[in-house]
Image (cartoon, rainbow over all chains, first blue to last red):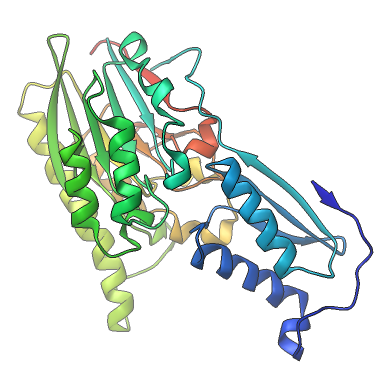
Length: 96
Length: 241
């Protein structure tokens, strides 16, 4: 999912909060600290946008993650590619 | 031949109940046992552990697990362990167990493991007490893994498997940022595996890593974190066992 809106004025106040790097760090802190307990999602600054990628355990987790990402990065261009884990059984085994 | 099913990092929560059970119920068709490589929950709460327990309760194949760092977050690993044990799961921390599969004995040695990094790029047991404690925790975990594997060697097992949450090798971290490798595993685990011997090493933890790797001593390593294998579990057939 992409949100290609042009960057707007950051909504957070304070010099540190306006620095995009720290805002990305704060997003990752929040994903770990809140209900998701999520450490496996990557958030990177790429060509002026924030790219958030990873795999989460459920559809509900994906919705929560997208909401938090857009809240924390409000005003910035955010591209997301979050996959929900596949719970299908394997169709073959690996012979070792 | 022994068929080992394995998955880690299933990160179950209240919204997860029943997601994996349909695939787990097919296990008797394709596997002799199921290994769970830690991070079974999101925060290690009893509520989340009950979801995991219900997902694997009374499965028709033996289930052996280690906990992961997420399963420690609520600081109740004993409670998480007890809830899983109540559902019939054998939970290992620095111990081994022998599973009988169709007349064949399979030994599994398990520990969560910890970080520290890999040869030439690793933390040392030096300096501040916190730093020494960090490395000692990994060393203690690796020592317990080595001892458990050595004890299994004398118990007539056709195959021995090392089960950890943190990675013993860097190979299976490929895809993760290099800067965080020291938080993803330790060569001390691989050294323990190579010293004691094993037929397979299984771990999780590195969601962005890759599945296949090998220790310096030639033991095959598989990262079975669910985001990596993109399945409910993978199955490894140990030939000659």
